[in-house]
Image (tube, helix red, strand yellow):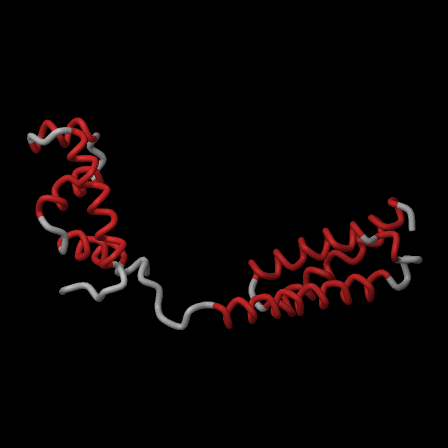
Length: 156
């Protein structure tokens, strides 16, 4: 099938493909993504279709295969995902971080908090009266301590 005949057949089938994508996917965003992926795949494989008569069936069959493959991938990803809730949930993220920072000793918490708020190491050194190297070391140590206590439950 030449390009002109292919794109003519595709344009005639576009509404049917979009409707089929909505039926397969269930929501508009997934349907749009499925339609785009199908359009990409069938445009890459346009040499495989011989005539425009069987184009719709071939395109919908391709869409069905893409949809089934994406379902399998999602199912596989869900099986591999950890069963515990993620620590960085948006609703509890800031409170969790603040609770963890509060668990640090004051000597490490103050430089780390100032660094977290965007102050430069030199400004923190001037503010605390410590050498810049000490400030950098305490920030690094605070990060290491936060990594170590991150898996422990927060003290509320």
